[in-house]
Image 1 (cartoon, one colour):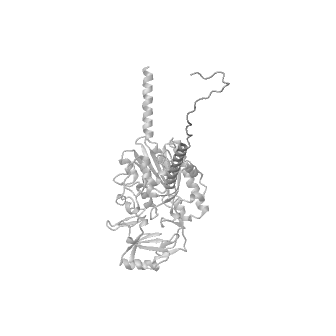
Image 2: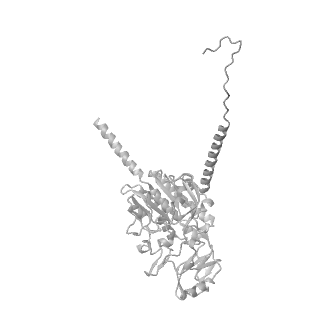
Image 3: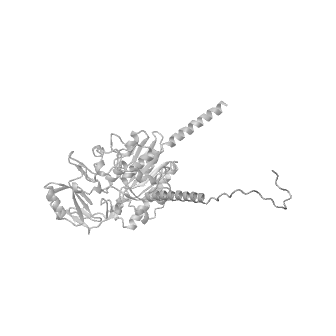
Length: 452
């Protein structure tokens, strides 16, 4: 009897512990750099399609301006526009600190500390530990914190090794990892090399990317995590075709002694050395395929004006055009253009217990991904530019209804109530009136008259 009681309570404790572990929501965020939204329609991607069929899809994500790698990856994990989080380009100059930022010099917390990414918030709020495989900024001490587990960026590390490390961390129990990020450089690198319209080469590259998705899915299944971990697959930007016939040559417009080029094409950041107005006017007359803005003139829709690292003059090339000083073009694809262009838009797919099955959205801003992730993880979000309501149709626990649907339901309910009211009124009006009392008359042939 005592043995049975011991076994019973031991089993109960194990069940409780298992339930407690399962009650901590888990989320894996994956980025395939430069995955343009319409690649999903152009190429056969069976593993990714299987992933999408079991979850949700946002066909086009409106990313943040400028549509480059470092700024948009930081927007995704902070929910902030670039002017708010401070990573305003892939190459930056801070005039106050006299510091330079580039992809080869990106580990100084100075550049990242104006915002708090979700992996820091996740650890600060005591929900669990965070892990990162080469997501931009994840190996930097931001808010004096890095993810508990992380891999320093190394281009030569294969996707399989990154994915295996992430899955092993998610599968670890000490400490419990409930949030992880995973980054891969393709199809961006090949998109620059071949251009997005080279279906032969890009088809081969995207087939490889799709195999990576399948590899990750199989690893999660083998670890017993497939049904418990929520997974988001997305990207930072798309890709547009460019060519040597579409060059904007700055050396034809003004001398290099007049300015310093901080960030390059297709959005170029210009720091004037001479009179700003003179440099501005020379650039305004440089090309009809390039918009030239003084910092204070940058359109509001870009949310790209209010930060000291945004330079005094910003050049924005038209889609497909490239800004150079005098060099030749070494690529057939590029990004960074106006974020209203469909070619700049990535996609988003997600599956797991927190997400609906079969839900489809036409568009979503990438600032809205952050509040949705915080909701999935049960975190109180930091101040951000996103709106959770915009992503509610992706989430299983949110009531999702559009304005037209809501209006239709209200009208339908009103019509039903009106019809019901009319039926009651008509029924009352049609009640058969009572006949006046008449004494029962007996017939002469009744053998047994009623008694009483």
